[in-house]
Image (cartoon, rainbow, N blue to C red; front, side, top):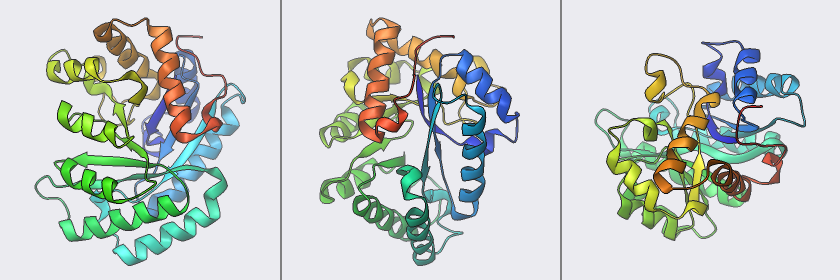
Length: 273
């Protein structure tokens, strides 16, 4: 299995890296993408990834990196300075970068002003297209605006992270060639609308993700989330779709590799080792 969205350096505030990787491998996780949120965090993110690779028993574990400026940081990062910093960082780290993210828009109450979010988002989208990289999108109360930008930007591809929107929105993103991240929300028994939607969507546009250490699933409400737990999401998704878990896992891995590249293709599997 591939965890396509993990904030690895944040997870290390809770557990030693060796423990995180050991638990992930024992659960059948063969790769993950460490996702960035702000210029002040990119170096710690890079260092955590380097340490993970050294401990990851290559080639049986693969790890990719995505760098970006999350919309929650739009107040703290001036758009022009942030975009210049990202351009420099991508130039330095391009060979090791699979995507631009986590970027996007969040129009919930008490979020940074829309204009600052839009300036950062549109600039990062332009950088992603120029670098031929996919984007990892944060979406909250912003699907229509995100879709407008996607439709207006030739060559843009990516995933909407932790998607919990409507089926109509899901189908609109898929129509633009975007993938949808299946997060731990699916494991909560009351998530009936989300489960029904994910059961009906085409499987070749779905990805597994943890968002660790954020958004723990039903069995881990009082603990940090971990990449090791994405097998629980796979099990629920297989059940609601009537699919065989191993076959579904292989398809979701293939989806991740199709979007992010063959660097994630090393020795992924779909159950405890």
